[in-house]
Length: 381
Image 1 (tube, rainbow, N blue to C red):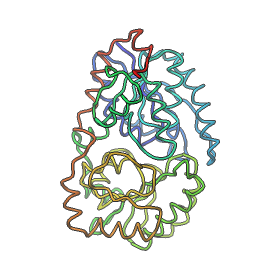
Image 2: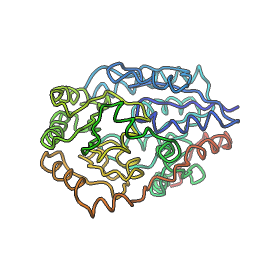
Image 3: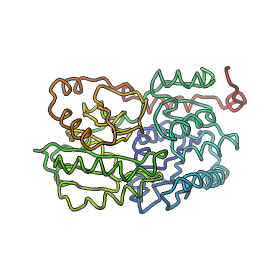
Image 4: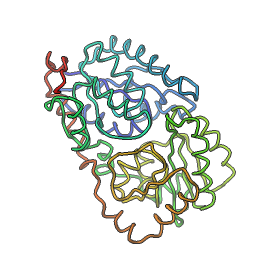
């Protein structure tokens, strides 16, 4: 059996990878080895490693790399700590392929360590475009990776333009859609009881992260959003930002709005609850990638705030706004009342696939030959 080590560092990333983990487990030629790091190991952000274990997975290694600091320098140091911790982990686990997703510091550190130890890296969601430091990190992972699993044709074309050989690239869609389209979610009435929601009113799901290149602006950015939420007065589920620079200062601003009873705040939610909440919500706002990737499959209007998702492929369900209270309010009112817009949202296509991504990834991981040609990369330009 071929040992596939999968790395997860955040709740959102784990939710996207969950169908892939299951597909690897049931693929007879593969053996799953799960490495948990980053926010999963932080009580400050919900200690979500418990959710992973509750789902029945064995955690084969834990790599501490998250510093309890809100400054950009801490993120840089975390990469260094992660490379050291991941290198030690790869030497111990001896996986034959490592699978990572996206653009965060955790997959970047895991990929650098693996590449220098000559372990092939498979990268999910390479070639996407977004704002902040995320795009350079994602493209750096692509240049280190040996097998590419882009979600769309456009992303695959970007990977090719970076000089990657065509035979390495497999357009598979996004595994984020697998759970949405194939697994039963929590009924709205059960979710309402569980989270104490009044679904007779418009429900807002708010997930806003800091932008690393604008870390000092993060407190004011979330303040503009929350002022809009307060003025609108709609029931709102707010989920903590991630651990990037500026995130903790955002949490401080969030705590100052705890006096409003219609705002319910959570450090984290289990992935099934989160998807069920997306299905039940009237609209989503913030700058989470789930508003871009998953939301179209629910016909969910999204108010995308700021530059974090700048340039990313999206459906017709997205309204882009700046960090301005009045602009956000006007966009929310349009998303709730504009019949023409809502009609387009309900029928919009999702550019990120058909919900059958995970089996494709598992099949390719089992069939790819690990040869000197796979390890020894060469640019096409």
